[in-house]
Image (cartoon, rainbow, N blue to C red; front, side):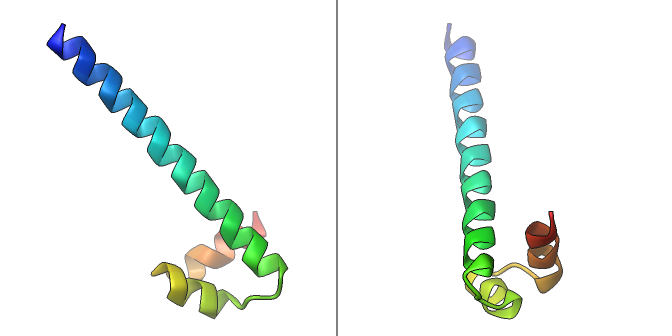
Length: 58
């Protein structure tokens, strides 16, 4: 039973992580659409400009 509980907890943590990543990408896209520069977004998120460019172009 303990292993099953740990497996469920891991699945919940994975879902939470994916949801947070999706939310971050949506926020990055929203700020970019509002006119915030890629450089500013990269500095605020500790991501490289190339990653931000990839997110906003897809």
